[in-house]
Amino acid sequence: MTRNRQTEASGIVRLFIMDLSPGALILCFLLCSVAGQAPVISVEPRAATVRQGESVSLRCQVKTGAQPIQLEWTRANNNPLPDNSKIGPDGSVLTIANARPANQGQYRCMASNSAGSSTARAALNVKYAPKVRLTPAGPLRVRIGDPVSVECRATGRPNPKLTWKRQGSTLQLVTTETNNVNTIQWAVVRPEDSGVYICQAENNEGVTEGKVEITVEGGPGAPVASVSSTEMTAVEGQSVTIECQASGSPPPVITWSKLRAPLPWKHTVVGGALTLTSVGRQDSGQYICNATNIHGYSEAYTQMEVETPPYATCLPDQVRLKPGDALRLQCLAHGSHPIQFAWSRAGRASLPAGAEATNDGRLLIARVKLGDSGTYKCVATNHFGSSEALAKVVIRA
Image 1 (cartoon, rainbow, N blue to C red):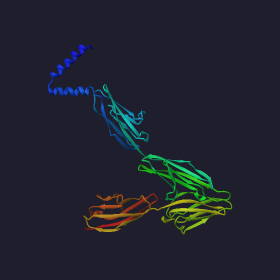
Image 2: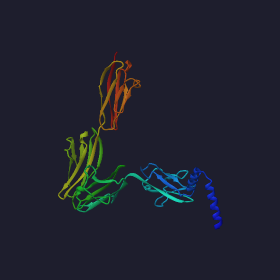
Image 3: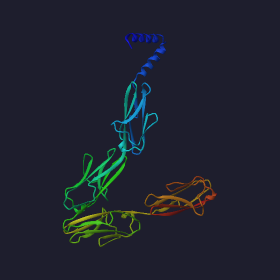
Image 4: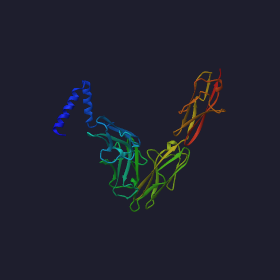
């Protein structure tokens, strides 16, 4: 356009604006401003935290800007969007389903129109339970007197806390930790250091363990003990045999002991095998096989838990009521948990109408009738057996 034509056009625009009312002038100003404005956007939420496996949506909101506006989602590091992400029909909502740890990071929404472009970001944090890696992974066979170290690394969000313990013991071992690597080490290993060692990683999302077995092999003639099982479960009343074998020259002498308690009085030791007769709950614990000869000694450990079937009782076991009274019976049971309770009435297919049996062993009838008389039976059951108890209910006007 020549200078004369530009001047003419400018005059026409001035004449057009002069002819507009004040309200029309404001509207024209707003429309003209928006028509030439680049997009202004935001992302909500600006920061989101989810657990692994959960889903999350990020919304790109357009504040102002000339239409049409195109929206595009990317990772802030210019990597492609993950394969578990989906963008909504209008492009404004980014959804990440079944979030994975690799989904953590920043996401960017870019809006563009004829006047320009703008971007907004959101941060996604994915929490997950720890994962443990041991180096070396084991099992390890080492010689008496050698140095040994095992490193434990763990990933997880939040950062997990690392601790070491020996299998069969709840005591936390003394270790060194540097740059999120927790190391258990021996400058000189001894036969009694043989065993299974556990690195435990814990954060708010869970607990994960890594195990390594270390076997210390003796020098010439030194004993090395091992047991048939390092963990075992027995049922009350059973007889249990734990076998211990030991190499060495001369042949080592094998003895047994129990951690922080004497051996049960019903026990025998024959050929290195410890037999416990008719075990009870009090016999649970850690049993130690000790092999000794002139060159040294070696220990091996077994952790035994004794479980018991339930023993049920009813309180009260006899009750007399009048019609309209409330019946309350409580079934109690000793034994290994979990224990389930079931109520029934002798000679009847079902409990009276209005009877309520609770998970903790209670039977309730708010208002009894004459026909509710009878013998009520509670059966308590766990993984190791069942037991029943009876309550006699008499209702008379």
